[in-house]
Image 1 (cartoon, rainbow, N blue to C red):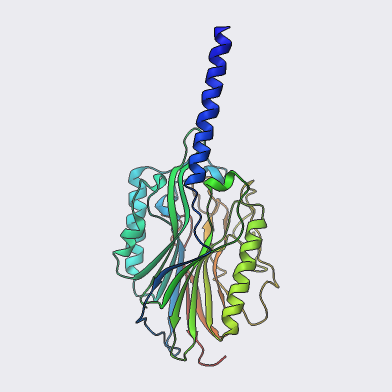
Image 2: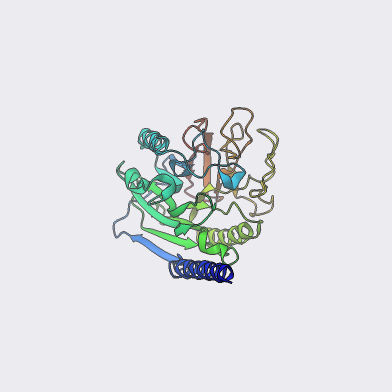
Amino acid sequence: MKTLKYIGLFLATGILLFALFIGYSMLTFYDPPQELILAQNTKPDTVSCDSTLQVLSWNIGYAGLGDNMDFFYDGGEKVRDSYERVQINLDSILTFLKRNSSRDFILLQEVDQKSKRSYSFSEVDSIGLIGFHSSFALNYAVKFVPVPPGAPMGQVQSGILSLSNYLPEKSIRYGYPGMFDWPTRLFNLRRCMLVNRYPTSNQKKFILINSHMSAFDDGSLKKQEMQYLKDFILSEYAKGNFVIVGGDWNQSPPEFPLTRFGENYQSDSFILSNIATDFMPAGWKWAFDPKLPTNRYLNESYVPDITFRCLIDHFLVSPNVEILQNETINLNFRNSDHNPVLMEFRLKQQD
């Protein structure tokens, strides 16, 4: 009889603790307004339509996904790297960004602010010391991520960071629609795009968008995000504005061969696909370097020419923007599971 009593007490305690944890997670659920103004400047810099400009985009993998890592979400086993290796990765990322400080615009994804997975390094602050004008939008803010059960991810605070040598007129976080089912949504990302608006020399606006689309969904979230993005940029272009979207799309450009860099590793959590060929109207351009991969899978530590690689980091450009050059900077995935991508462009005086 006592044994049954103790079992019942144990179960009741477990249920109570679980209920308290879910309640706490609901109370601390990150739920920002759909449109959140991050910064407004009364004296922004003007972008010249006669200038040759450069934008670089890089998912830095929170300095925790170097070439030695695999990751449990992608079919691997590890949850986080060692403190020493995260520090080495971050130092190398900072060195690269300093070397590229002359780029006009830099778009970064997976930048941690205070996360267990990156040992609470304030990567946002560290990068900010380089000297760019910067804006940061949270897209992952969870007090405690309980998976995997044996070694939980714990606290995650991370987002997308836009850097510029031009002071923007306005920086705005726009929340993407769609969420995972409850209660999974309590421990997952709140995807968004970070929009910087710059005045230009022809009185129109230059709209630069930093975006990181969903990865571990069944495709339904990406579909909602892509439609929201499409509606937004078509509206801006209709006003005569210049538009560039860069970042980690978690999709390959339209018609790009998915097995260009090796046979596709079949992951249960991430299914590689192409953006639809007819997604954007005529005149809009996808900008990428087809010669090199931008991402490698994390089902295993990186083995050159064996680990599956793909191209999911690229740019979308409005018809009134001239693409001059595209380049993927091959860092061999040493300090991140992504390679940086660079585009040189010019804003046309007239469409």
